[in-house]
Length: 113
Image (cartoon, rainbow, N blue to C red):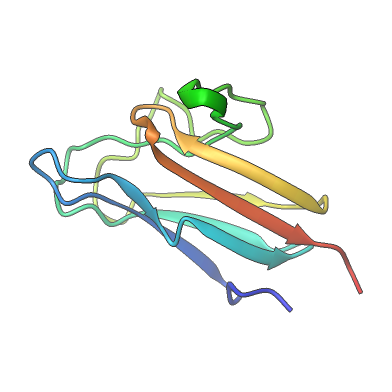
């Protein structure tokens, strides 16, 4: 069983004023077919974030094309959301395309029983 309930919500937050940007929680496990909703919950409204799949080996983040909220419409207002349904089991690292190595997370999709 997954540790993130359905619906699964991950918040995009920072302490503002140069504080630490983060995904909360940063690492989750979900069931195959479950949707994750990333929600902008940053008290510093206007501090932009993305949700971009891909690992950051050695501090260099490389998007892998699995999912991406994109730069065209950055998440920067309380309540804005990005959703993705995971249809393949595996581990999916992701990061914020703006804050790169400061803001990373992982979604582990458990195989069907």
